[in-house]
Image: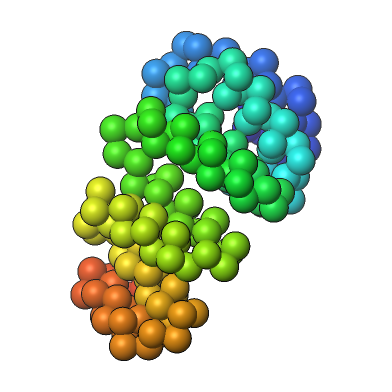
Length: 169
């Protein structure tokens, strides 16, 4: 399935992906990789169509909803992206990654307070997520609250001294 996507034969890959999801409990991790193949190929419309079909077929798959959220985000449909991420969160044991991506979506929309709330939720669920701290810092920087931004950049660097974004922040 993923090789067909790499070869720009997305439609042909769908039956193979559906078969794999039905027969392999661990396949959801592969869906994350597949979603980024669509981004790499700049096939956002195909990604929306692909993950919409999967989310309809497998409504209890957090990976299908997460992939759909990514696809909507890439196709500049932030409200639909947030809805899809919220569906993924409702199915996940730990929705830290989905909350982080909701934060990114709100950041791109210029809704920095909402972004901070979601980055904070991501960090509460995964206190090793230095990306969430960097996201919070970026929001405070956009809000011209530079001391708060610096505090969060420092917290991110405490978790990962190699974080380029925090070092540049």
